Structures are given as structure tokens and as C-alpha cells.
Image (cartoon, rainbow, N blue to C red; front, side, top):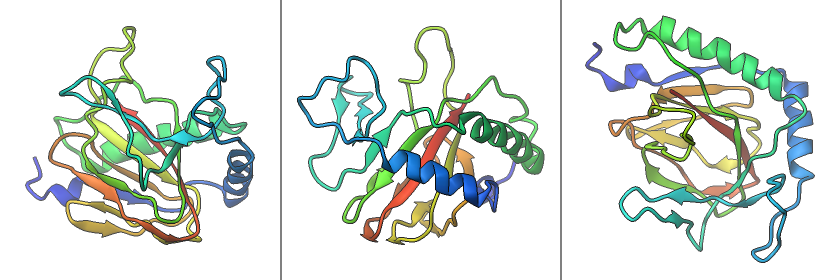
Length: 200
């Protein structure tokens, strides 16, 4: 086992076709933003304030200020993105070459994140329980971040006190456990568009 935790954090460059990224950005930016009282009858093709499940109090939380937006929309090129992720999950495990991390059962659908000027994501670890709905069993082992654009300022991804500058088309993979707290710094100009997925 590697003793330097930073060796478990890997960025893969130019993983996605730039034309497909631009089409996806256009598609996502065309979606509406949900207003608090609007009812979408279970359809989640909209942007809403990012929320998370509190393990201690078993409640859904969202900050009132500086909160990014999330979207569960399945984009037209969904299969393309999922196929690329499949390849890079395998590559990560091969590159890491750790006998304790040699198999996985699956990975979640993409959740899109949009950070507008003045928003960020506070430091946390990915102890995600909501992805296990009764048919899936387990806990997340790897966290994946995919970057759609890079024409913004601020918004650096920070993990283990190391700032990681990601370009459009990059994929970041790292363990989900408590040893890998991470955050996204405040956007100072433009918008940051990305996605997340978790491997179990």
C-alpha cells in the first residue's frame, strides 16, 4: 500500500471530445432553474440548489448562500460519457496497481454541477449513502469529477490541501473515504460546469 496519499489522486487529461463538451454545455445551459414552489412531477430536468444528506441528523441540507446548483438530467451523449468513465476507472485501478483495490461493481449516473460567480463547495468527504436505494448495496470507494469547461476564474478543486487545476475534458479520480477531504474554491468570474460520479 502506498503511504503517500497524493499518489491516490489522479488527473487524466483530454478524455472527452471538445465538440461533445460544447454540445453538452449548451444542452445543460438550456435547462430551467427550479423555483422553490414549482412542481415538476418527479421530473428532474432542471437546475436546483445543491443538497446533501446529513449522516448525523438524517436530514437533507442546503446552504442559503454561496451554494452551487445540481442537475440530474440525462444528456443526449450520456452513453458516450459513461463509456469513457468505464475506461478510466479501469485505467485508474491499473495505474494504481494496489491489490486492495482491484475490483468494482458499478458507478452512478452523472450528476451535473454548475458554479456561478460567488459560489463554491465547502470541504467534505464523499460518504454518500443516497446512491444506495435498496437494490444497490455497498459504499462508494472512488469519486470521479469530470470538467466540462475551463473559461472561468477561481473554482480550483482542492484535495489534501493541494490545488488541482483541471482543464476542459479532464477527469479526476480519487478515493471517497475520510482521508480525502476536498472542496471547490469560490468562483470569481464566469461559470464552472462539471459532473460527479461514484464507484462502488
